[in-house]
Length: 250
Image (cartoon, rainbow, N blue to C red; front, side, top):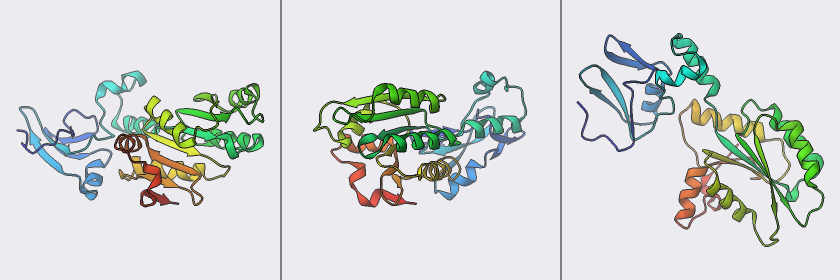
């Protein structure tokens, strides 16, 4: 029986490989997400059908939901639950696009930034380097050589801005509209805060199951923010980055 108060957005645990059963009754989650959701005041409903009694996470898509077929690509379908948890934890990391604006960054600083990225445990899915036509300190071949050296494990793109009146804010809006990564990381000046911010936000999202608007360093030149929230606010005539109350400084 399904509760009539189920939100349109919800996750039934019934067929999730991490649902822990005693006979046909779900008693827990192998990832401990049920208790974590409860601490975040996410409603957990009890439901049943003709085959099982199970939980429904109401009002939220669970980031841990995986069916057995998901593990086929890793030859783990018939493996132990521990092996499946280990594989999930290995891959369950922050999905982000990194934008590096070169307006205030030198070529030597860029190389150091790329070295930092290369040592990250959680690398970007994509890197976009923003250079400007009126700044001749970043020839394409020089940038390509650096990226070929340090950015072998992710997709990268060099974007040249020809219009001197185009602001970085306009550039971000365009990048958000053209990409689907869950988070955007924006770097507009040289610093060494990238690892600290990535590790922090990954813990917030994937281990604490919490949310944030913007995580920033002290100088606000390294930001992590939700692409979806940013796009929603832009659609409604607002800019997430303009509101000081949205920032969590670490």
